[in-house]
Length: 162
Image (cartoon, rainbow, N blue to C red; front, side, top):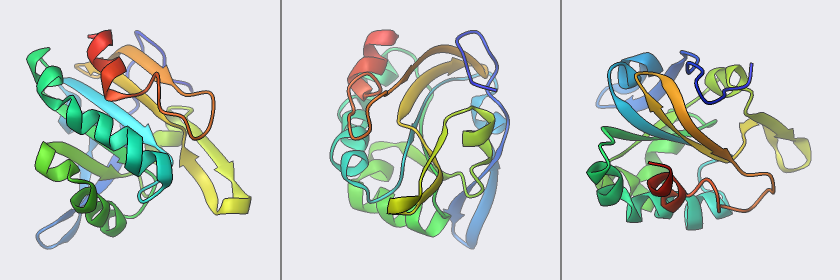
């Protein structure tokens, strides 16, 4: 299944690092009855993800909130320890972005957004994309076609889509 405008987001159990270690989070618990922006990216501590994608959402948090967004979620196919360290390093957590680990690539595969690049150690990683969902229904989605670019999936683009 590939997520499309008008389609329902697949539910998945994601992970984050809590006070007592890794915690499971049902994506549906963050999207039910809410307007969210969710952006997926290939990996924590990778070039474009760290220097362009996350910063574009940090810069646009006020504008997204002004457009009625309840939550901005960053999704990465990594473990929750790596994601927690990365969100601290990028300032995503301080900006109010919820960073979640798709440990088994469960959501990413169900959404049809997975890819592999074995030569660089990427197996079932996430393509770079961003979407707007209301009550779990996709209202807008943009996925990058060219690796290493962050144009149509940036925070600026999501503000414009709203």
